[in-house]
Image 1: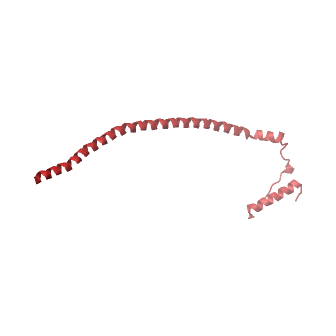
Image 2: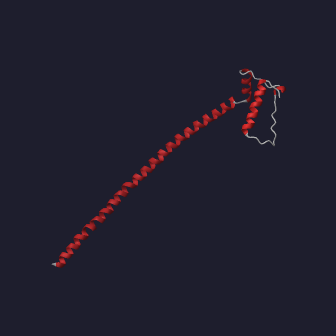
Image 3: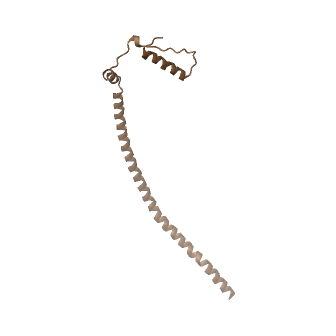
Length: 135
């Protein structure tokens, strides 16, 4: 009796393990069979959405490049020397200076002054010129 009981105990202990392994194998197979096609579908969806975004970005880039070309053309047209000169003459009444109106400012190369003092000297000189003083 003792031997048969030991054999039955061993069978009952081994039986659940034998049933669990095939069940885990089947569950794993089912998960693989489901996740494989899902992964392929996800990949295609991702590729399609990325392609759509790239097309939208290409269209946006093309429109921005056209706008940039238009803006460059407009900028070149508005900053042309002839246009600026025409506006200066007609709207502002400006003319080219006469030779007596041209002043050359000489700054000695050996003079070490700060930018601030040079700026102050230039502002003082311009005040004299505007007021009509000669020095």
